[in-house]
Amino acid sequence: MNANTKAGGWALLVGAIAYVGLMAVHPSQPGGPQIGALSLNAVVHGTALVGQPVLLYGFWQLTRMMGDRALAQLALCFYVLAAGAVIIAATLSGIVMPLIMEAGRTRGASMPGPAPSDMEVLRQALQSQAIYTMWLNRSFAGVHVGLSSLAILLWSIAWPSRAALALFTRGIGVLAGLGVIAWALSGSMTLEAQHGALLVTLVQMGWAVLAALALMSARTAK
Image 1 (cartoon, helix red, strand yellow):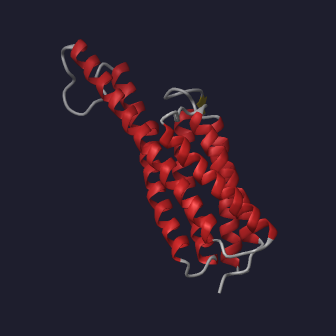
Image 2 (tube, one colour):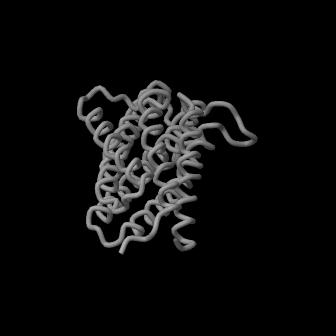
Image 3 (tube, helix red, strand yellow):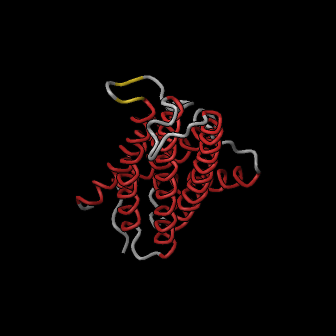
């Protein structure tokens, strides 16, 4: 095992634990308690934006460990798109929604251009924008869940190692990937921060922790 492979394992481990922690304290509404000059909402989503490249590096090293297997490389492609989707979702929730709320508090003074003179028109416009932003956020979050679950499933199938930890990780990955995809397709999944999204995060990041441990103890595939 080379230094990059070990670094990839640590990236997965740290990124997964951090992601679960962030989701556990995710505020149910924009804003939340203040941490210094920043709101909890800003800290959670800002850290999530930084955490995705860390996880992506770990999964890249996991893919390299699997050698030239097409399924592993395809899994990485799916995860890259999943990471992009969740970055957009975090931006909408962590940056765009607070700006809409701030515009409501300042009666449009914080908006670009002249403030609307009719406050009822402003209220209706901001409410529509907030609802649209929420729909976009949940849509991109759903894309992330589906694509990342498919990536986990493909990595688990492609994994070449027959070591005990690797086999266990593969089995859990197949169950996690298929289970989350089936739940999403059933139409009963809700991606509220403290409900469905937290459960999906626990399942996926639990697998990432196992993958990290297996990666740090694995030999590169020939």
